[in-house]
Image (cartoon, rainbow, N blue to C red; front, side, top):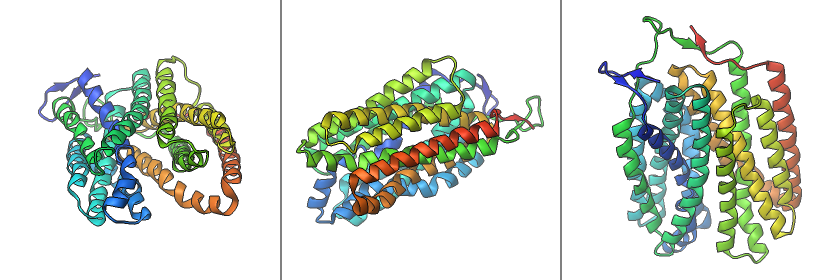
Length: 398
């Protein structure tokens, strides 16, 4: 597709454009993945509590949950590309600032600004994909985006672990990886002039009934991430109780990212994709099976469960982003993806808040079995809602 930009010149997204947006999407996971191996060092070296040290990981997600929609609204007003570039700058500065912090409260302040940057990156990168690409190309790009996010989580956790062996603060330098992404964005990403209805190209609006479908998709991304974080937040404690080393634990958790990568890449190559309600039902069924397996005291069964959870994510995430983008008019891509980012991070944040007391009250086994029943019922509800609402329609001419 070819677009007109502000100075009247023509702009066609290039391979570098696509790579910049995909790499930017990978940065979304760096709020936690890159520095999670350093949590123990932060607790010891800064003389702080385990709770405050854990906030180094959870605080950016909470900030994204708050700022996701405002950043989407801002992006639609001033331009998605401008917000992406500004957010990458903030991401780099706030992320690397952690290296120089000597107390936990200053470090947590930098994590607040990091969360704002991540909210802008997540919203703008996905929104620009929705504008630059359409049809099968958009579906493929969204699937590859999910693969990049899964791959990024694996690589960044490994790099962060190696850096944490040097010193607790060295992993914060990994945020410099966003510098070449920023340069690529400055070169190859542009805000484009969207149809307003006053010229030859008509403006677009939400099709009738599309917002009800989008509500189902928003609820689904919340549930996907809620279930995923039950695993990432608790599996290390379960493995430690089995006398499994932290190195092996890291590789087992990395398996989730790897299966997400391969599933998303396979999704991008399939020509005919079933309706979203069937894809999401499959994703939630896989999550239900996976989380049931975490109740086992067998390391092999638990490891397979982690892998199955990644397959569910690899099916669910590109299904949701592709359909949200398809139903949203170009001028509303920022708000649409802002709400998506908000609910995605709200799911991870509330997962520990809700499931922590439940696990304390009834134990791991019963908690996992209860979660499996809930997600199975939710998947059935998505199927029923999707069939009741009918076929979702793309944005239509105003």
